Image (cartoon, rainbow, N blue to C red; front, side, top):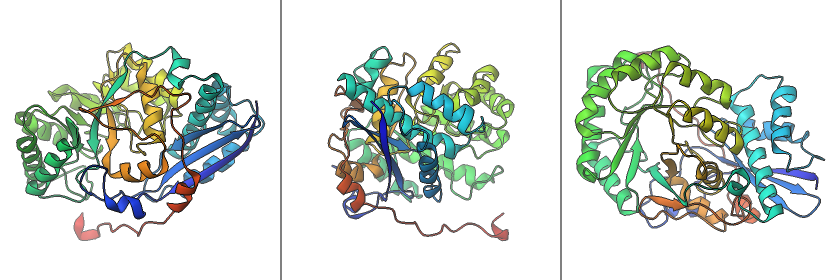
Length: 397
């Protein structure tokens, strides 16, 4: 079996169907980035799907990376996954990684696993030692839209719990993103977390996101102020580029510290473990290099007693499916991410969407990744450039 072609689809999530809102829940807006899907075709009629991580204003660039890398996949055996990903890193990229490179590679890698599973008639996780669980706990993200007032956050949090979630995550710190913040910003963040905790009660986990924006002194002080509200974790308090600073902050924070969404490949995660910088890591299967790379990172984490909570700022279709297959066999899996504001469009393009029940999704059992995408629906939700974002001027510094 040989690869004969590769197609890339950029999908705008706020097209017609997404405007109707999250399935079985309120409309919170559809996000601020285009999704990127990859289809790999073979000479035996099998095809596979993958998804590349994207960010706002960084979507066409990643699709271009897929186009360039896919030239080296044409004619190859799609079941030789490790060989291809190693060649891309060693030879195509000359061992110079980046978010864009690893995001593109991740989509191609997932599609190769999808084909491999279909060829053998088994789910992808069966090719990696089989599952250790039949369901995965998920937390809701993307539920709070542009809400900033505590009252509105409380209302949306309650509505999200009604959708079947028992864990939800949000960033309580208002923009702009700065390392040094004033006391009124800290107080606002605490008030937001307090409102959400009061709304959902003690039995729902509240995950606090910081987006790697704070200097250690602010990260530690804010974490201490949030202790009465029992956060499940404190995610990315400090930039991972300074792992020693992150480790120092973690030593003074009394609830679990998470890092990893800005790290790509096992080489970048090595320092997390060696410095003791985190209790839990959150690699993203759509930007670390794919399913196998995530499993290798998780195995490294296990030896340091570090949990894995995969990041999934991707669709609740292919991206979540790839995460599910990677996580199904991880002994140190904790929880994974479900973006409710990307669920409506995911349901329009996928034939077997995931359903959240009691805070969990089922591990797929169908061959390959376990779902297929509708190309006509992908085209109908085609790429649209988002309006330019507004950033601060001198007086905002």
